[in-house]
Image (cartoon, rainbow, N blue to C red; front, side):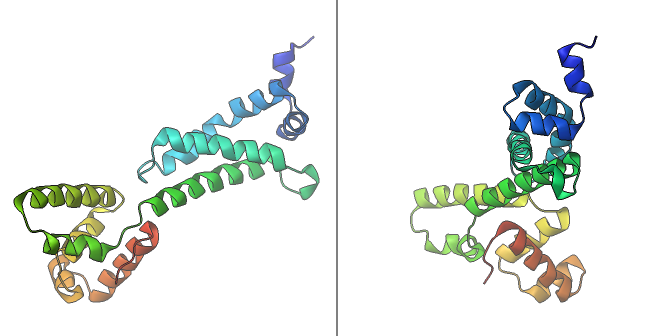
Length: 187
């Protein structure tokens, strides 16, 4: 005769989900054990997004709980398909929410230096600028970092294009991409 733990591990995902929906903690634990590699895999894909890896794993777990809660076997999708979708969506949602907290106007960053009057304010302002730049730059590719730094220094699209040896359209497209990903206003 199989032990209780082995019977749970051998059970199909759909059966485990149904049992977990009905309060079976053993089934829920088995689902988490079975789907932990998927949660870690999807979290690792977004590791450099500015959100802590452990936070992404936690969000993936929330997505898995949602999958268990809302799974309907008669909807036509396998539980694994539905669970992976819920895990990814929860992780992406957490990333979007994190980037909304980081919204800042690039023009504000560009003009910070112009409002400084005394030496103490200069030091404080430089530290603020540095921390804002660092937070933003870690989200960019090497090309985007160069482009962004030139942009906040006040270079025109044409000057940036010449410096980076690309067309102005690529500069514009890259800045638009940065804008979309960060939720940042570029005026």
